[in-house]
Image (cartoon, rainbow, N blue to C red):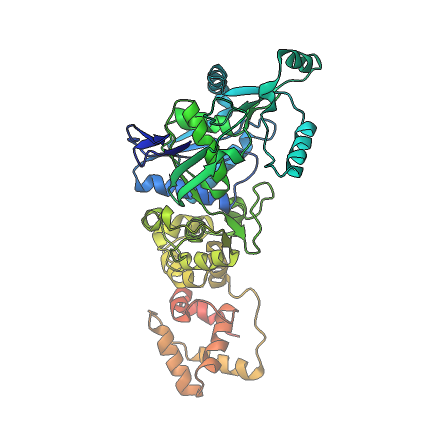
Length: 481
């Protein structure tokens, strides 16, 4: 028995019979984290893949919070995730919360029970663990053996009298007359990222959909919501590939056609470790507080681990143009924070003043000199906030006075005596250094380094030819040693 499903093909192949259906008219994707912590760059990769796919297909992006774990999910984390997404440039068309949709899941449970596709199990965790060990010793796969299907009414009554409450398992597709003797049951789909994929359901346990206390695990609410919300494409990490086989079966059991699935590779740390939302590793919040630009995060999150070169992309429109889910490698992609800083510098070095203006005002940088100042210093910034350091240097002089030798001090006094008169323009630096070279014979580093230290207090930085007109003649003379 096998399925081949997906709206991209406009059909579902079941038992070698092709069932035609209308493809989805509107592309609808969703990003569905559990709000139990801050999202990290790996989560952002999934959100961005969905957002860019929706952009390229004029589709809808649903932000869905899978918050059925009411003990650990908080509104605070939901709000923080939305803030992180907005900072990245992702603005959902709708926001949904699973915790407000339990009645819909309850109805789906009753439908599955009525179809005899959901069955009660009374085993304890210890009993299940023992059975898995026994199966391993017999050379069998450690899957659930469907023992609950053979329980007699008397056994069930005894369990209930002992106070046991059942958990409920979904009966995976089994098309023999005896559900305890499953034949090979494969699920096939054409993955948006990975191409042809297959999951053999016979190698899996019937999944638990509802716990003993009546709360839901991930699988059922996710499928029900994808159906109810008209999700056409599910793009997520490749750690969900096996889940997809189960979910396609559940879509079918609920009478719905599965969406198109796409599973991208996961990001790991440079040492190969997985990223953790709960540990806060490389969280979007921490990257933002470090001064990283959102498009630096987006560029690296989307392009690393693909056939595209990792470059600093200036905006989402350009990133969408470069985005191709099929160009994603099947192997994990290592995330190197050092690359993030390289991309950040590139973005700042090319950022127009119109884009930086409002953020510079917050730093106290405004007025007629703000734009020429930005154009002068942007090429030397690691973070935009560093512009404030150079603004203070221009306004107030070097933070620390350099320790010049007597020879350099004499040279600088002579050099400052040669300053051109007002008015100053863009050629004043060339004129001044020409006079100094002619009068002192100095050139190269011996000429420029003492001047740079006297003017800025730093051995490197923006071009002095750009800074000198901002300082003015009076401001320049004030830096004479």
